[in-house]
Length: 301
Image (tube, rainbow, N blue to C red; front, side, top):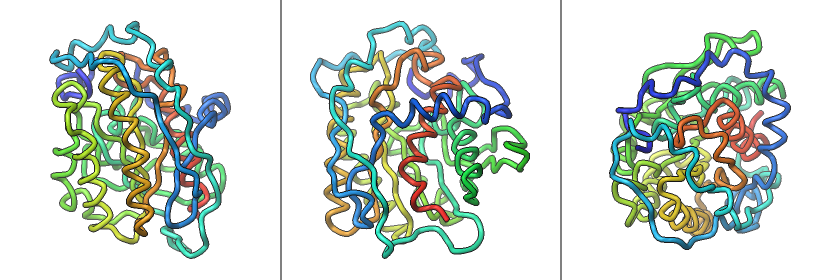
């Protein structure tokens, strides 16, 4: 169901992504609504975020990924986003993950939502557009199958990433540090847990915490940006329970000096922007890109 390799190619809504800039203004505006960042030791903000409300029994399913196509008409997950997210802020000058010269290396880490099923290149296309239009030099790292358009805004698009369809939090953790950190990133964007929601939601937050700890230990000079997961209507109860725990996981580590940041990818994400009930369509990926960018833009050079 969620992000399994069985769903590769199941969503015909994808495209080359070359027109990312044309969707930028509308989606970036909506993406900014409620997007925010919880506290980090680098001072992005000392406001603690809370994400979607809990409650509701888990409606997770044991169906295979190929059966998720009709899920987008399921119960609206937007109503679950009753929590508030923290407001963003300027980072402390004492922490700067990106180099003074050369590209800032960003590692997109996760499952098929990071890979970009449903829209070739996923959120990475619009994120690259947003960064380059503001004059920032960024690139993406990762060892997985390169995808996305060849060019964005007249510039070669870095097609690397570390997103594998069907992977759970533990499977993603098994790729850290090798091969995921082979090319050490300056910023890590972590969206993980959708596959856990229908396979084994119990303990997902503990597994995520362990993955965050491993990233902090293996990439101590990088900014680790952790998001809750976007709506997954077929497992709405499990998603709400899981998402509600993530801000505190991040805050606990930030308070101990780790360069870690929370981003709310769930709040106000409409199910209409899920192309197959699991993976975003072009508009949904643009929304994700806007929220990632709101979190990291002050750290880019």
